[in-house]
Length: 257
Length: 261
Image: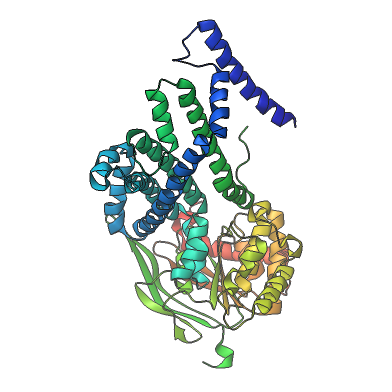
């Protein structure tokens, strides 16, 4: 309870600071709107449905692109970790592409797919695959070799060894990779939506960009807050259960103090 | 294969080199050794004498450069479920609880029903005195408990041969003593063939029917000692200490580096 109160106090303090800054510095609401203006926007947009429909469009794109990206990334990652040839070819390529900001794919995506859902998905997938490949191959290569030896002496080989030993042993790395992939997917999609207007769906990125065009900074900041909140919710919903499972089993995760 | 050869091991003229681009290390030189069914053999020697390599070769994890190893009269071509290994680090799987670890080697036994597997796992947990910790996670166990679970995991699939690679080296003296007692009890009731590798001479005398002394560069078996002391043996007994003394001097005489001290 005390913990929860101090968390609330922290965020209340942050908003207060924001409010004080807008009053004391006398900035134009065009540059930094006061918190109540953003709150009003969020309230209105929540009830007229724009926020909800934009969120659904965005999250749907994100989930589809992410799932495809993870499937491709894990498959390639396992190939990379089992063969030196794939390691020095596909692995190197993934490492190189991971350093390429995914927004760089937008021009190509537009050329190849036009202003379509396909272009959006392409950017998300390209943003996700690299980091998942790297995390999967690093993960399966970093597990203690003694696990593989134990498995071999117990007669666990091939598919059985992979499903019962290598993949579970690499779980901490895999979850980290999936989390990173999620963050990359989210960023890629926002970049794509801000840059590309398409007719098949009006996402959060579009809402943000329209706010800029209309000089409605309350909308811009409001949408930014929504993006952060969705990110937090998915992190808690998708990844926290896995992390709890690992911390309990591996005995990790105690705070360092 | 006759019934009384089950659990028999024969190492015939095994040599092994480890080659890298710059050096070549002669790890084992023409090792010949037989272990009778149900016998407890200890291999002692200083670090680098190739005793762990020899164990790996018997396990089928490493292929010798020459010579061969026969289990129950059949040449060993790879790891097999009749020869299970216990390592110095318990190497328990952290994603499984204690029971899951003991079940690991049983999962692939197609001749058993799920219920039979569970019963076997439970019996082995009882054997090592850890029934209460069935649902514990591996990080919650002490070093000695981890090795007990590892022992149960290796014994559960009912191997003919148990290969132990310095399984007690990382434990404190008191825990180790308790495990010596446990291991002797289990060995006497289950009559497995055991090969235990150690650099602790007293441990070897306490546990083995026979102690083979190895020397390094290249790894060779130099002498064998029969241990006829009554069981269960106490590591602190003076008879045991005397024999250990003899073996230690033999060790030193075969290794110029140890002899100099």
